Length: 388
Image 1 (spheres, rainbow, N blue to C red):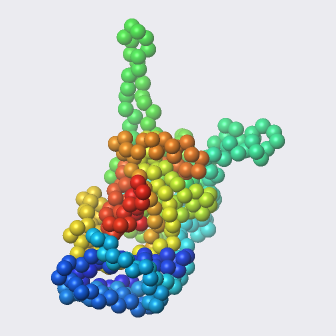
Image 2 (cartoon, rainbow, N blue to C red):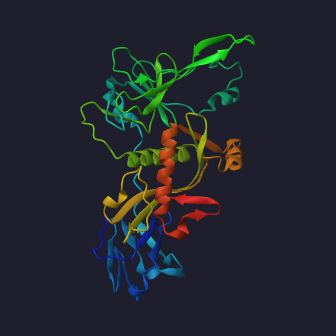
Image 3 (cartoon, rainbow, N blue to C red):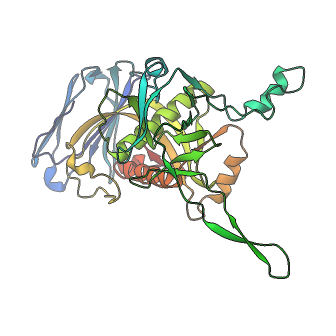
């Protein structure tokens, strides 16, 4: 979708807002030897020529710039030239649902561990794939019914051929004839019974479900027959299709972005508290928009921060064009932002999403990496960090 000359030395960053039909173009600050700079904007491409080389980016077919609309030209030290212009962009293709209810129902599906490809549940025929109500649905029943709550103490558990979908998880019924993931062994702890130093061994409740092969946490047991699988840990696809592993960080941020977009659309909520299965808050996140198309040529990537626990993005092409969800975020690890996290926790407009604690840390690394690849002027807004 985008190409760059091998000798390119100038970084080009272009964000197109599909709904606003506008674009922000940032040309990275060149070295002194790279001046003067010759900039050419056409409806279908961008070209930057300096004495050190040429950077040329071809836009996706659905995006067209309007060169005559260039305005707001300014220079920011350490960042480069900024200018805005109008753009004609096709409507963003609707994100595919994390679980396509229409096509998956009636089909035999296989559940895989996303990290290693281990089969968790094989050939499960799903007759009903249904969304769960929101977490606080029980508190609203009193407004709907003029008689005592008919749903009191009646949890929503799937039947044998059901799959219920929550905000960030699937609920699936277990069957003894299918291959099951192995729960972690519950550790033994001691409890004091009296002041006379009598102790009793008692197993500590542990509901984790882990992959037999790679030991990654997949979900939690909800009852003797029901397992909650987290969307970021499981791949569900028709049994006749071969499984192919998607790079972990790519899969996690794709699923995470889909959850944010679907929740913001369905419930008009844009602030999220991301917490681990241990109940700790890891990230506070504010969704800004989901209609951005980011096109960039990184030029020299020597100054881009690398994260050894994530895939090496430098192996990809030096130019890329990607649909992006734009967010502001605050990390809450190591006692950071405790007061803000407490304030958001008591705010009914903030929606809580629960994921495995290890995945929350992965997501924080992904956000930090994405933030580090932005032009410096776009990395912060007030006290929040910015990430596409």
